[in-house]
Length: 205
Figure 1 (cartoon, rainbow, N blue to C red):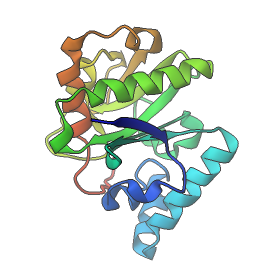
Figure 2: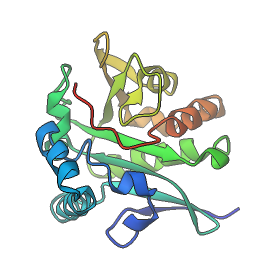
Figure 3: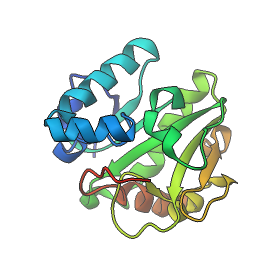
Figure 4: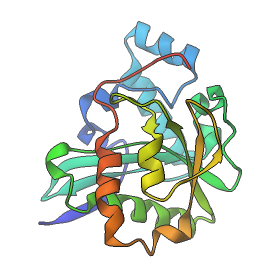
């Protein structure tokens, strides 16, 4: 089985699931995001966001391929590029961290270690760029697939709560710890990456 993790660009954006190409939950603030959906142009806003981040900051995601078939992806960026993050009660993300926005592994490919490979690849990329940690907003009341990652799953793969909240705690993963993960976190990572959205969600916080 050939596995590749390729930096996300406008050229391979079409390899993301259609629902994710049209989701701007993180990329726009709540008002702008809802306006983009009403105007019927969220895909264009997504492309514009990725283009801007690539030009100003660099790689902000990875697409996962198995035997040249796209089976997953991850998106991440400094919080300055993630307008929605300021709407959370536990913001802001720490200045030495990058925000894990969203991720996905196709159900048929979960349980094969791809989750661990994805997060370790992101960790190596960010360590080279001088960052110390990944932070994410978790959903402590998560019950169905959405854009906010389930807090329990984040904790299961090594994130620690840095700002508690009954609904949206902010969690942190020190990057150096990800490079020495054991196999026993592999299933937890697959659950995390497989639990992200089924449909685009623009919901009030």
